[in-house]
Image 1 (cartoon, rainbow, N blue to C red):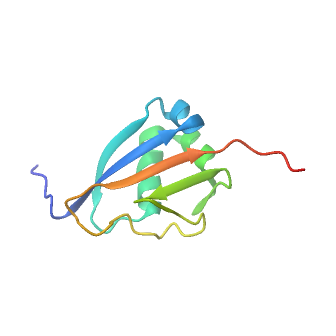
Image 2 (cartoon, rainbow, N blue to C red):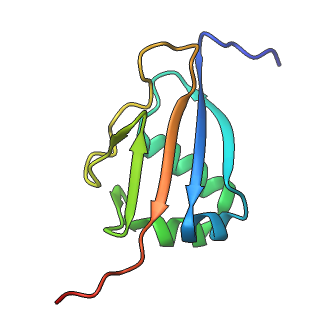
Length: 108
């Protein structure tokens, strides 16, 4: 099947810390539909990396864990705003997504 570059968005995902250890790689590249959101990306990553990934990154369906930071095209994504689009303007440029799982911090 031919790839339709005008209908898909290249997405570069970078994993850090415990997330990198969980998935076993520091980055991956995917192609998603042009109108994909953060939720679509998380669904694709869960399919690729399995339930352990989902459990680590999500508190519940549709909500990021409070220990996860997602940065899309240089902007932090609110954990309740998974409808944030991945496209950053130029459809020929890859959306860059950084996924970081922060360790729980002790209050004081």
